[in-house]
Length: 304
Image 1 (cartoon, helix red, strand yellow):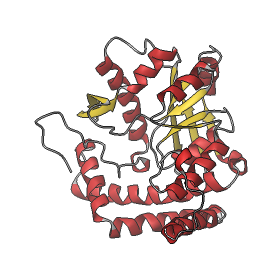
Image 2 (cartoon, helix red, strand yellow; image 1 turned 90 degrees about the vertical axis):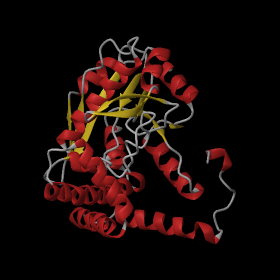
Image 3 (cartoon, helix red, strand yellow; image 1 turned 180 degrees about the vertical axis):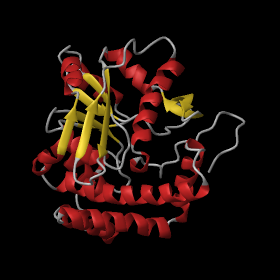
Image 4 (cartoon, one colour; image 1 turned 45 degrees about the vertical axis):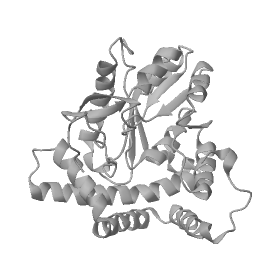
């Protein structure tokens, strides 16, 4: 639902669960750090027990991407994934409900010069983010160093969508609906940095099949298309929670060279290779709850 279609009032009982969720996020954002981690981890492990469908999706993704893991190792990583994504709920609450400046001392920013130099070209920057559990907090912390816009998927619940959009609009210069290609192009041509995450399955029509962890995965064409339309350099960005569970690392990579090319599959494969590299560093923090391999080449059976 777009911002223009939000209702005038959210008093109807159908919005009460969303109000409770929003209230819980505000409360969670202000918990002491250790308690915040403990609550998040507990929520994740509760979901691991109570949501077998998602547990199956995570297990399937890990079995496909990490065939070297035996069953016990994979089960351990499934639990770690749920725990990390539970913590991610509290990290998101912190990003949306508090000023990120109180966490400035927890951030290590590496190779920021790659982004600064790319931005100095004057053509905007398409910043490639990844759907880690830390995504929203990562965006909030990154904004302390570089102002940016963000491309996002609207939430189906209009109240929660308004809450989410308002929060992201406070963090970023502009929150752009993922279907608003003109908006992305306009902001890049105005010289802005646009945070964009191309690591999910958007379906056959929007994608080409390119390798991801050695598996042909539907990979969105739009990354190369936007770069071609605007001339904006494409800068890969890594963001993760460190093993101490107290600090975070942001790391910029050099802009992709000779991108885009004349081969859209090769372009998609280059983006996937970066995403895979980032995931291998901290695999439990990735959003494996998403059916990354939902769309299959014609004639292939589904995985889920």
